[in-house]
Image (cartoon, rainbow, N blue to C red):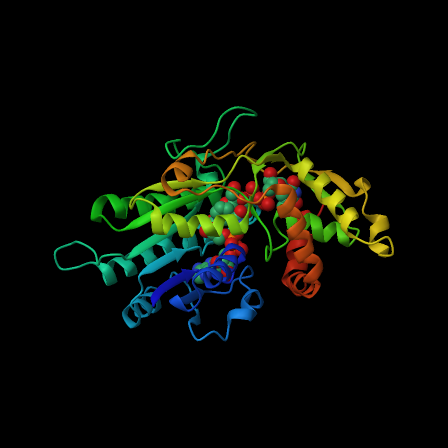
Length: 359
Ligand code: NAD
Ligand code: DAU
């Protein structure tokens, strides 16, 4: 039985990844999920797997070197999939420090612990032990309106404190690969959407606000472009890179699904109206009148777009879920999990929302 150490597994992508991996490999793998449970971590996301004998949750901070090293000493971990991070750009603009701490120093702690556990006396590493660092397309900066794409060779040009911290963490992973031949890969993925995403990010925020008749805050002119990927496709890509990718390589994950923010909002409104029965009182207030243009995000990147040529050619991965299908599945998931949304948006979320969106 192969043992995985997943960091940040209680967050959006991490919890989807754990579900994906248990669906795919069942009893053939064991997963240890290490998560600090910040505001973004939610054990409700993993309710259905929490009693699996091959699943263990450990509440810990990835910056806590002693605890992380002990986890490596006590378990023969063959795969690390490192998601844990502060992930929201708006929060990084207000409070950059924790982004450097978790994203840069936390990644360094993970690298040191894995290196100490896996390095052999001759400086080589235990065979078939691998570290996958989950990163973002935001490290490449911002593209012009049309035509250009992010390739693995695109120079790094991060702008927000979030993307700068992710770029720094990528450079540490690259340094360990180049200096020690540390067995790792980096994936740089575009914007994910799907179940279990906290409504501080565009898609779940717009779904939740529209359902509650609240205004839909559009930054700037609403024409910034993101390249949207259904989260399960990302999870599959991560697994395929770890199993089929060449060690020490970076792979971009994303897939020619560029949309302006305002287009996304119109699609959400249309899909909500299509899905809600006429008898549902919420249907009447789901109109374009909710759309409200607000002050732009500081340093707002204009366009992200991934060229997934390398991962397709070398690993055989391509995005399988069309946006029209993915957004329907996502909205249905939020309809079926109203309690999840209520729990996530109670308490601290309200304070965050009021502070973030006060006019
Ligand atoms: P998220 O914010 O939903 O989840 C982050 C998780 O990490 C949470 O469970 C949180 O509790 C945990 N965490 C935070 N700080 C920690 C610490 N110090 N120690 C241990 N755990 C800690 O994030 P997400 O959207 O699921 O993103 C996961 C990863 O994927 C991040 O590295 C992010 O940069 C990257 N990524 C995200 C997207 C996206 O669209 N969401 C796209 C590309 C890459
Ligand atoms: O590209 C990958 C990145 O995608 C990940 O690395 C990040 O972790 C993830 O948060 C995401 O970053 P973005 O900043 O692109 O996502 P967000 O959902 O915050 O915003 C998407 C776009 O929508 C962006 O142009 C800002 C805009 N927006 C966002 C919010 C929350 C609005 O117009 N209004 C809003 O209220």
